[in-house]
Image 1 (cartoon, rainbow, N blue to C red):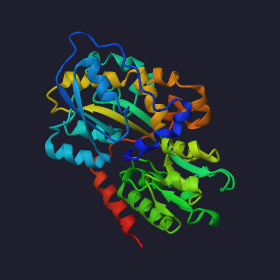
Image 2: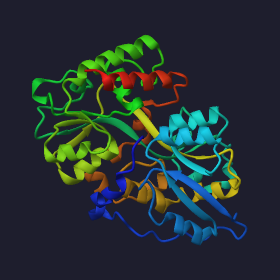
Image 3: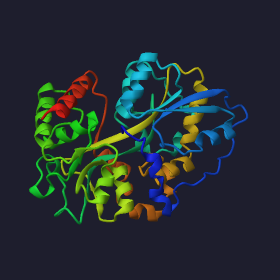
Length: 359
């Protein structure tokens, strides 16, 4: 994922089903737990507001939060500073993979994170980091089409609904503008991989997305669900959790994965190689993997989590109200996992700039 900063103001979406809870602190950790202070880099509103306070009460470790708006923003800071100043980073999978390739992340010591046992087995079988060697998954989901079923004829079950829409949808569509996800829609519409690196195929996707631009209401990474609720938009390109914000306000809003397939994205936790308190960093990740923290994430952020114990603790009513929450790990892994594209990322950024600047 790329933008989470608006989520803090959206926590009321699930209030009727137990969101916004003050979580009871889990049992204190062992007497010999690490001490000191750590710095956490995360998106705004992407973890319980009292988490750092509870973590300190349970472990004696002080944690400070610094907020980033995008993966690209925090990567720029970490690469420029060699990772100094951070102990734990929340980043999407391709960026965790890139940090590892740059030797800016530390190996994950599984013995120091017993709550790894709370993950689904599939949470340790992810293509970008099999076995959780350098990252730990926090949340995962898909990207697809979110639409007003009362305003759209039939089910828009193809990327063509965005790329070559019928007349009734022209001017009523939004698309994500973030590099990986905008190009991902273009790639999938052409039958390509979301991790495409072939320059010719990147150019084909660029041309298709420029052609699609004339039919858009806007590019929108943060308020697209609001446009659906108001009726300004009828169909939006969306991450599944953000579609749930719309569903919470209007039962006619639905989510569908296009028949051509989509990406499986994962947001992860990484310990920096430059951390001077890696034991405390591991203790923090272990705390985050507790059942109650994982349950909070799904109830409030409205995304699925690889935390099996947390998912099993959810109120069934939440799953009924938000059907994409019921996707199983096997169903998620049936989609194409997003991974680091290496040097092609520069081509991605350049291509998206060209799309944005095209008339």
